[in-house]
Amino acid sequence: MDVPVWMTCVIGVGVVFAGLLFLILICSFMGLFFKNKPVEKKNTVKSAPISTDNNIDPKERGNLVAAASVAIAESLGKDVSAIRIISFKKK
Picture 1: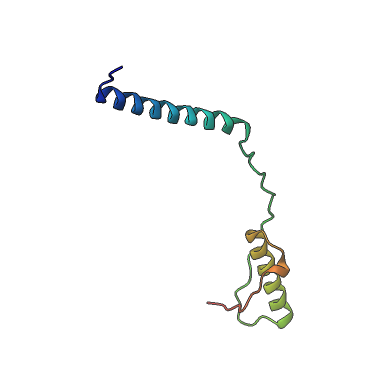
Picture 2 (picture 1 turned 90 degrees about the horizontal axis):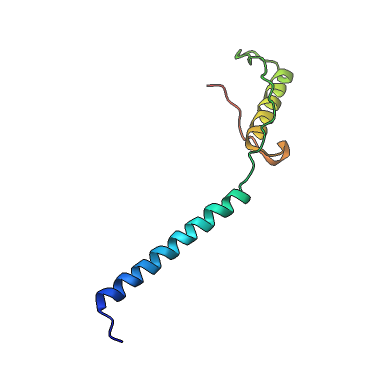
């Protein structure tokens, strides 16, 4: 059987196109079943504004650093012991 060259090219491109379309349909169909459910966010409590006085006693400064550490750890999704604050300066 004598098949022209152009017919071979058209059939080859058509088979590849149909295969890719089939893969897209399979991926879309499977995406409906394996779709990740959104994670519910925890309610966060807003704290009172932090004082910016330069004359903070050491105990209050420790509380301020502790509160900042907890806030940073919570936003990163890590435990407080997993982060390390090197310096805490007022700008």
